[in-house]
Structures are given as structure tokens and as C-alpha cells.
Length: 386
Image (cartoon, rainbow, N blue to C red; front, side, top):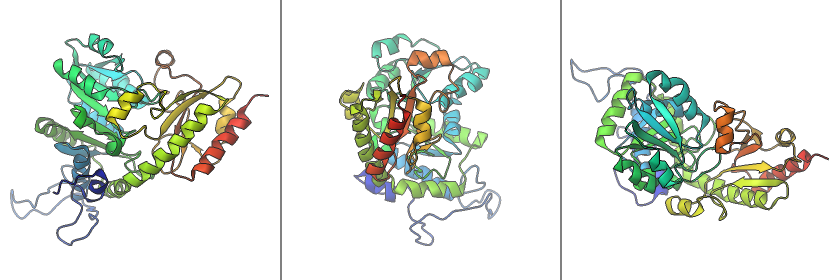
């Protein structure tokens, strides 16, 4: 394996990028469940595809190279990946989570892991003194999203990691919004990085997948055991699709961000818009921190319209931008967090952390920017109450 200096090159040539047997520049899809053995205990590196598959192995090596870890692991979804990570914990353990996180993460902790007496506390990871005050003997891990979903709240990953490690906590960072092209949490002190690779890494809204990268051999051995034991692995064809998607991540993200910055500027200056949440704006919470730890502000934007605008009419009036779950595909998508991505979070908690019923989340795609801006402006104009 060559350690390439630039991420753009690693995206294409990282991991296992060439099939050694044939010289194929794309790793084949090894669509098999099992492997012939030459005798008892005489395997050719593989025995059963839940345990290991060459196509999945190439993907796992690639994401590990991109995040700069010790080992990577591919799962059937982002939630399967996070489930495997949380399976490192034991009954009686408590997890701190950023004050606004993906609704599925909240649901997993509050409705599944609570059955095993693994509990959670919502923490303000943007305020180090407040964050540290919430750490006690029961707390064993922290889950950070930065920028967080859906308010784009920025956490100083390095600072939180330093505080957390003083108390022996495992630092888990969901890097879905930024990807390793824009932000590398392990370099900032995180122990584990999780991705919903369905989003920007796949990039084409055609595969559901999750990835994990760990910083130590001890964690690698534990996650490998959990992955094999619980079996939520990514299949070979989806692994192939994800490798293909990752190869174009740099060029796609550059276009996503270029478009997002122009959309954010439009919204910031628009008379109909009450509030814009985008870490690439100089006025945004955590702008300076995000500039230090990430390449730019990414391509996710949330915003609120003034009360004299009807958000239902806004959604119905969009023609290019699709109202849909998910994010990070080449197409622009919009959602209503309160009733879609974060509906599993109780209303009182949503209100407390600032996820209002008027919040709109936008995943800016790579279409022509003039078409995106025109669609948004037209929908806003139509949504004004006369």
C-alpha cells in the first residue's frame, strides 16, 4: 500500500484498488457466500462471506486509508454500523450525545439499547465546562456529530477528545456530513469514526451502507468480532457500488460545497428567511472552530422562514429539489426534520434543543446552481401568505 499525500489520489487508488490476479483496475464483485478449502484448516484467505469477502475487504481497506485508522469495517447501513460500535458497551454504561443528532441515533439509544441498561444523556459538546460537568463514573463514551444534524452545530472535536480521554471515555464521531475529504476526526483525537455511507460516500442514492474506522488494534479486534458475530455486513455488490462512488467523492464534494455556499448566501440575504444554519457562514456558531478542523462548511444547510410563509406550500412548490429522506446524493433534497428525520425524538426534546416545527433541512446537490437557486426562490415566493 502506497501512502499517498493527497486525499484526492487516495480516493481512487487507496485500499486494494487493483485485482492482483487479473490486473483489473476495478475490484471484482465476489458474489459468493462460501469458499473452497484445500484441506482441513487450509484456506485461501476466506472461508465464509459474513466473516470476509474480497470486495468488502477492498472497501474496508479504502475507508481505513481515507480516515487514517488501523482498520475499517463495512455494514449494511449506517445504523448497523453504529449498533456494532455501541455493542462495545456494557450494561450500566452511559453515553453522552451531542445536543442535536440524527433521530435514528436517538431512537437506537432510547428504544433499543435501553433494553440492555445502556443509557444516554444529551450533552452540550460545544461548551467544554458544561460538557465535562456531565461526565461521571457511569459515562463510558461520547457520540459527536460536527456539524450536527440538523442544526449544523459545530463541536471542537480535538478539545472534546482531550477532555473525554482524561476521563477514560471512548470518543465516537459521526463524520457523515463531512466525509474524510473535508474532515478527519481520528487526526483530531477521536477513537472511532462512523459513516452513513449511504450519503456522500456512495453519492448517488443507490446504496444503503455504513462504515466504521477505528484508531487502535484493540478496537479493531473487538469490532471485527462484533461484525462477524452479529452479521450486519455489507454485501459484495453494494461494496462495489460504494467503492465506485468514493472514487468521485472529491469532485462531487467540491461541486456540492460550491453550490451550498451560494445557496447559503441567497438564504442569508432573503427577506423571507428568519434564520440560516450553515457552518460556512462567518456569522455561524462555531465558524472558526469548523474552519480549523474541516476543509469548509460542507453542503448541508438548515433554515427557517418567517411566520408569514407557509412551509407546506414551500415544499409543494419545489420542482427541482425533491422532498425526501436522506442526503448527500447528486440530486438536491429537502426535508422537514420534525416530521421526517427527527420525528423519533419527542417534541419536548426537539423544542429544547432548537429543532422547531418550522425548520427546513436542505442537502444541496450538484445540479446547475442557477436552477437550484431559481427553484428555491420560486418556492419561497409561492409560500408567502397574502
